[in-house]
Image (cartoon, rainbow, N blue to C red; front, side):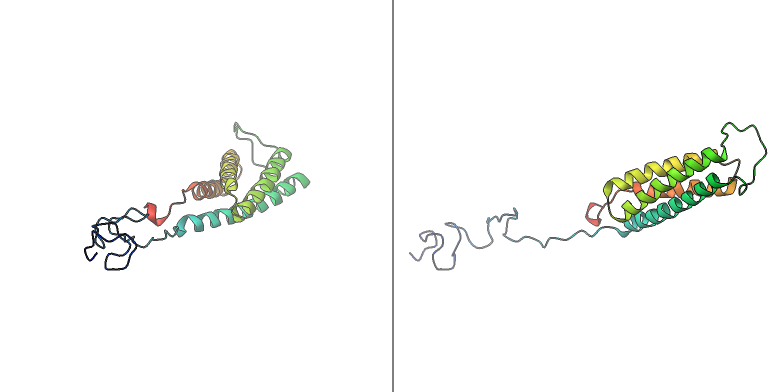
Length: 175
């Protein structure tokens, strides 16, 4: 029994544990499917930080915009003497203070709640937040004749929020 072909698998000797006629490192497959029995170390893919930082910034902007919308809505509902009335320019979209105040108040509350949920890591909050940012951009578009600079700034911030919330979360291994 000095011949390796005559030895059984699992007995002592230089070919211990291998099939008949099989030398160490030749044709032996492991569970991972490598031919030599060697599996390269598994590289853990670390997530990119850009989308996560953008999401955190978008969540912060959503919370702040929500708070601002609540304040503006409450001021618009409480008294119309705070806001300056623009002359009628024949603009298609006419807002009363009362209607504008309710829209800002409701949108602000929901935007604040969605921003908090983005911070808590809820996946659905990213999509709800992007939808609310679209509604906010549309509302500010209608307010361009009344507050042009603020409306344009808010439209750009809403566009950033939409982009940051809908950016796919890829890892470095997928790149």
